[in-house]
Length: 416
Ligand SMILES: NC(=O)C1=CN([C@@H]2O[C@H](COP(=O)(O)OP(=O)(O)OC[C@H]3O[C@@H](n4cnc5c(N)ncnc54)[C@H](OP(=O)(O)O)[C@@H]3O)[C@@H](O)[C@H]2O)C=CC1
Ligand SMILES: CC(=O)C(=O)O
Ligand SMILES: [Mg+2]
Image (cartoon, rainbow, N blue to C red):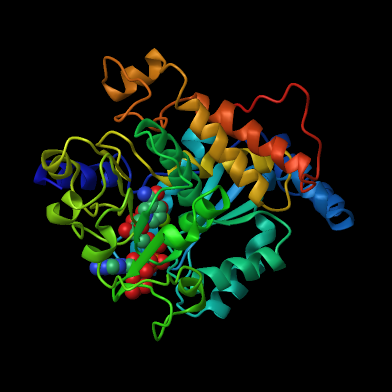
């Protein structure tokens, strides 16, 4: 980042008050009568109701529209294990995005432990407070055990955003980008740099919508994950390829797609040049991508490039998923976020990108025009239609797959 952006980012977080979120009241609290209702003695009545029927918490408290963003800070963006406190700006940022894009109240919680069981215990004990739990920036492989234990124990949706939010947005962007490049997911050779939370979930979802597992080469810090490699955990093992390719240079040569979910500046121009004609490059590491878009575009002009950042075209980032997915899930009180709901979100994102872009979006992006093509494969986060396209698609999928606990109103239209 240049110096000006660094200073602006620090000032943004420090002013007008430190941080990015606050709590506001939804009921009057001015008079003695207001206080007698809000607090003692009135507050005893909803307490009694909830003690009799726990679902009354959705009637008398903010639970149903409250999502916790919970991290232990072990994989903060692509910055690594910065610890729980240093992850707080990212978690406050996710809370900001929940509110801004989907009207969901959200609070960040940083849990100071790297022990999976301690983390699970802590979250399990506070889960009832919330309508949903968004796990964030927890490194692999612990994130897999943590998420599945919490899904098992909690009756509300628990969703590891770096896995599923990223996978949904990546899948939608890739389907669109491949179509623009005249290629099919079923035939695409995919090199995935990174074998952690985001990478494993992305490749799993791509396989479930048509990519061929044998066409995927996944790499970690030690290179290609190949069949028979020693010291590979069970999650990486799912993508062990029967191949004699060993390095990124080996795996990228001739590939149609590069998905980077690893770290900064790891893809060289030589590697980029060795890819197939009309390649798709998703350099999604944050804040610094695996290759800078300006360098990639200088190197060859037949590629589509996306990053996780807001300051380049084609932002493939889970912000396009989690606010709207939770909106749909909360509005039908879904018990979980299942595969059907995730796939519904992928389709809705793919289709919205093909719609004409509104003036509101053009103004917010400072663009004269935007249309479905190499520089616009996926909607912009500021597109207000994301809420009205994704949330109903996800809510309907929850109802159809039997995980909704209340019906979807006929006139359902999510509002901020
Ligand atoms: N755009 C988006 O929406 C999102 C982007 N991301 C980005 O993806 C990256 C990974 O995040 P996440 O999966 O949560 O983190 P994890 O810690 O779970 O995984 C990181 C993975 O990256 C690999 N890796 C790191 N450095 C290198 C390297 N030099 N060469 C090869 N592999 C490397 C690690 O290898 P090893 O297993 O050997 O340690 C590991 O497999 C981050 O940069 C993050 O910002 C994540 C979520 C969303
Ligand atoms: C975007 C995001 O969640 C990440 O980079 O970790
Ligand atoms: Mg993250």
